[in-house]
Length: 126
Image (tube, rainbow, N blue to C red):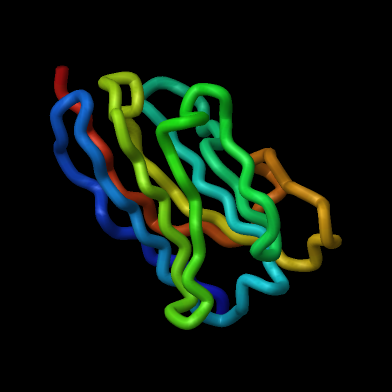
């Protein structure tokens, strides 16, 4: 059974940093694509960062240069390091996974992901 559990959210002042973790079970990163998404109140869920089968990471323009996605295969955990946080980064952050992805293929969209964590709240105060 595939499970994803996020942690690391919290309240931080603008300019601060947080590191989110997504602990995965039931699969290995070599076979799956992982995405970090976020959803602010009243807004649609949007993609933030993606890592497909441990390959090259991708970032939304809004977080490029501030967020870094990485994976620790030994711990089966994916991280999202978030620096220089802004109030507009406030949202519930979700990690998601999907298998059966060809090498070099990046699922960017919400509907492409099959498994989702429960989410972790990130609040950035101004």
